[in-house]
Length: 532
Ligand SMILES: Nc1nc2c(c(=O)[nH]1)N[C@H]1C(S)=C(S)[C@@H](COP(=O)(O)O)O[C@H]1N2
Ligand SMILES: [Mo]
Image 1 (cartoon, rainbow, N blue to C red):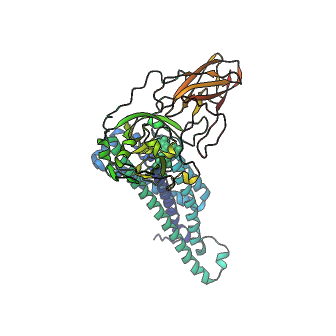
Image 2 (image 1 turned 180 degrees about the horizontal axis):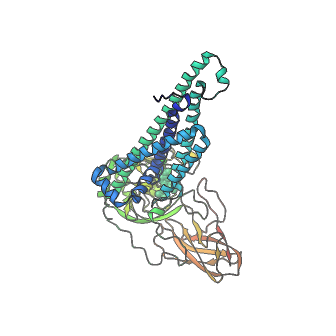
Image 3 (image 1 turned 90 degrees about the vertical axis):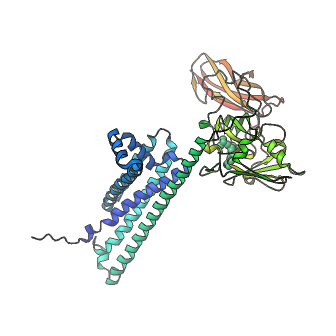
């Protein structure tokens, strides 16, 4: 007896659904890959799953894989994972044929598993789930769309009886053709986007991996003029205070860069030009051969609200901008230096400030390391006393000596003020807002800054009582913040503490509240807390 298989219109046309599933999965991974390359390389679900897989593989299997495939072992792993994933995704597509909602839920469940793999990596946090979430959303949308198109191409063939079967012959033969073409176009489009995002993402992360390797291999020369060691007691003796020196990994980051620029130091060049007697360009090697200097500087962002933490303190290594400008010899009438980043960001810095002797640096090092990629590798500016948006250009490649009357910078074009000196500020770090502290003696602590001038006094007022002088911690330099503390004993219940600082010029921090726009927030910081 011969087994004859009759081509059932329904079951024979499973492949468009299987393909829809595979394409949706490919899109999910592609979108996640490009997003992670732009956002944070450790957040790639593909890499996370591969790494997690390597971690759980028994060592005999690892040894076997290395024996058989040698250095191609990782490639073989990635390709095998890809094949298994596409096969599973094809099954998902077949499920979606009858139960698209269930398949969507399964797809979301897969995204959750991928997210779990990302979170299981050592250097990831909740934000690193973003690429997987974006990929998951794209994947589910593509699955639903393609499955709908796949149904349309089968329906007129009698897959489901309905009004179509009673329609005239003309539409009966024309519609499947058109529907088939629509499905193929949809599938092709999804494939193109999936492949492009995957390839783009992998290429981009290869570039960042290379940039990180270059940075890791870089040895910075020592400073000709080193910073004085920190005096003992720069940290206030209040438990829970932030460290006096901000570790690079905890340093606040503010920039307009969607993807962190990756600059190869061997191709980096700084062009110094404009209203100068001598234009020149400087290479990274030339920069490192100059007399580098170290200095402690507290950077502050103009967008820092009263009491906020958009400030960080580091030891910077670099070449004095004053000396660099002396070599260019600015012409009379120039009053500004427009610095531009490789990504187009620009800052207008007053020429007076850059030549008044303060420690303004063309910086290459941060806390004893090359600048981290996200803090401007390989070269940025650091200017004590000015908010970052008018001075701290990261990935800097161009300095134009010009006039405020002739040129404007990125944020000045968007309503922020032209010069941006940092306002005298103080904040309470402990207790934190709404913290409950045990009864007995409490140590209040915080931070104050008045870069280039120095902090002379910090005063604290609790519950409308008298202003009390806080104890100042040791001062590192006038360009750094200064910690303070105050011992206080209060009744159980709710309390409010407020703080103000006085700088060495005798200026008392104003109580007048100002928004961050256009030139920085002002006002006294207040914290409410409870004594148990
Ligand atoms: N290229 C570039 N440099 C930039 C910015 C930017 O958006 N792009 N932002 C500036 C701002 S507003 C601040 S506050 C500082 C922050 O430096 P950080 O990210 O190293 O803390 O960088 C400045 N330099
Ligand atoms: Mo900023």
